[in-house]
Length: 308
Image (cartoon, rainbow, N blue to C red; front, top):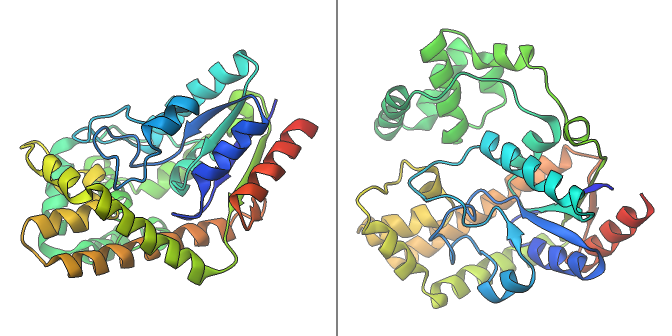
């Protein structure tokens, strides 16, 4: 029985595709979203409504407190478990989401890296706050040009990890990548992968959907959701959960950094940038079959899974 992966840029309709697929197949839906894993981050993460989740349950939603970072390695371990459980019960595992790093980690496997060092990590975050991530990217380029070449200067999560590994071990993280003995999902789980993506042909239409969805989030109480998070003394913007697109802009607005109109402009720009990055990932994966709508992606995935 194949393992199905449904990808796509933010706001493209991945949840709709998953639901349409669940109407066709006896499947087990597994969220592959790096923000929906966190409890309390509901509106801004576009988490499916409770009514939808009651009818179409998604594993790996609401499994982590936002004060506790969730990594790609955590996702692979959890997703592998969910896939095995689905296969054992005769259901088609369907991973759905736009976390491309998670998708790659699940598909290809991960290198065995040193454990995180909270003190070193905090020191790197403090430097980033005072100097900016591009400065730290330049520093990484000096000690590990291979890793720096593959990490965007504003990708704080990956920059932090690469610098952390070098500071704690004295070895470039790219050395670990070269030594890694990856075990692809097809080998770990014993089933082939079928990968599809919802990729709207009209980018202007996608941008309109992004804008409409964000405005709907505002009407649904996004500001109140983030205000509740701000009241917790253990939450701050250094946490991956709150660096998510939309959350960090609303957090700044509620902290008095800028007005509501500027927050909206910043959040929309960041979301469009996220969509562009996701599309760039997908263009580099020619084996992923891209379809222009959720319905067509679901139909293609269903047909392929049955034939396989």
